[in-house]
Image (cartoon, rainbow over all chains, first blue to last red):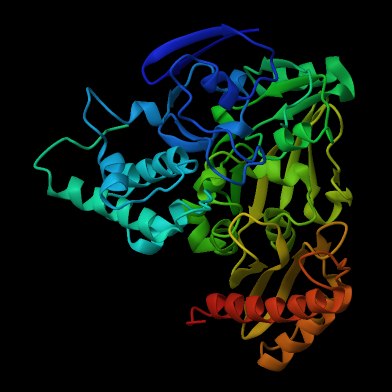
Length: 163
Length: 291
């Protein structure tokens, strides 16, 4: 069946079997392999993207179910060469080692800050609890999200990405 | 690599159209909402529907509202919206207790109450919550609506009273005076299956428990309606000794299987402890005291 999905503001149309998972629809699109495909069982969170601004595990949705909705992937964080504060925070706070969980961690964190500009460390930990990191542990990831929240709070106006 | 097997897909434009499609295609057709139970089942080939009928566009099924002595929850209401509902927090705080420990926040963005109940996983929390609250569910089929109480909803492991051409459209909760409720669960980590969970509701008038609901998850082949524990509580004055005994009875009523999450005696012990804690919290809420 032909499926059209808006991904990072661009419409992607492809003829795929109805059972195609969203994660594969995304990753089979040239330039969009940043969304990772990990455990396949909704546990690891490497595949997290935003659908209409809400974080969702893309291995547990069919692409067909998302037609007509807006998807944002990790590639959609950077705008015109400027990193999103979440990305900058991961860089500043050394919040990744192998990087496999990073796209999902970033999209879950972005969704958190979109709804709650000044989360507590506990709220950050809850927000990323749908993701699993097996390298660094979570301390630096929490620090990165905190860095991004503080960076955004210090900005005079809209570096915040409205969703 | 886990992928769902071949299927067909259609998007429902109305509840009536979805029911008509279910009736037309027979038991090979399945409704998909959040998809967070059905799609994993399809990946494991535990479910191989020939047709998926997607009801995510049916916004008319996504609501939480109070009407004439009832709170009505639409089947497509997402976990995140149950967690954040001020109405539920005020009247049935057991929902917020449970929603904080159901899967993880990302899964909660998508999963629905209707899907959770219809999946009828014996380890799932909302089935226990709705059973403890003695909720009714509305099942709509080709011939119209029927209302089924949660006490008659589960007919076996992963099996419910929902017939092939029916859709669960609404959960109904009666608003009664003196209500308090709570949910206690132990899990090894966020998103894991529960080791054990206990959902409790009490209705207290004039210092006496006039009615009680106790339901257990993850400790048997189905959600367990702990009827003897409820019977023991009814008509009694709340006390620590009463909660202890009700917990002991609930543990007797549980049917845990030993697995990697623990042996049978450990799980039974947990049922007693969790039920006692939930009763303590629910009673404090009913009496507007600190737990």
